[in-house]
Length: 147
Image 1 (cartoon, rainbow, N blue to C red):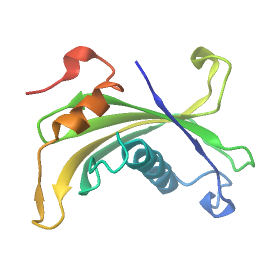
Image 2: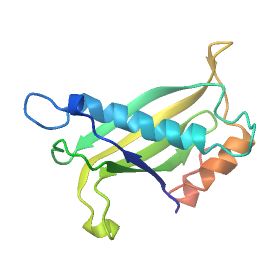
Image 3: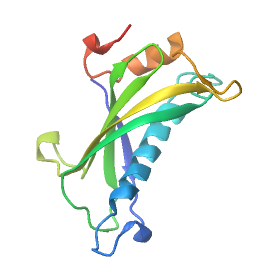
Image 4: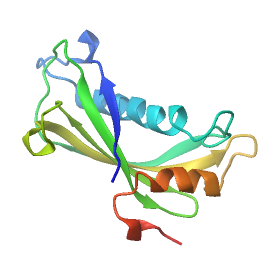
């Protein structure tokens, strides 16, 4: 399985009164990684994939350990766990870069259900064949395709 890797800088303003990254800020980190994955890595020059809009239908987030501010960025790994006809689920781990994944310090595990959206008509839309082909490269389990 291929994972998308995003290096996310920490900002001084990300800290809360307790000196660690505020829980809400992690949603912004996930947003940055998701946008980098879906829009910068969309297949083909000039491809319309994912450019028509999308909306977040659901977030789930597990805070594993506090992250204190530092100058080194965190790594956000993301991958696809489900592809449906009109939605997809992206999973994430926010962690320190490590020599191996088994030694990585994980701060957050999360997932997001994303629905492609037709902004002009203001309605959800189906995932295109090109988008599905791109997403399948990052699919955790080949059997995770939904009808």
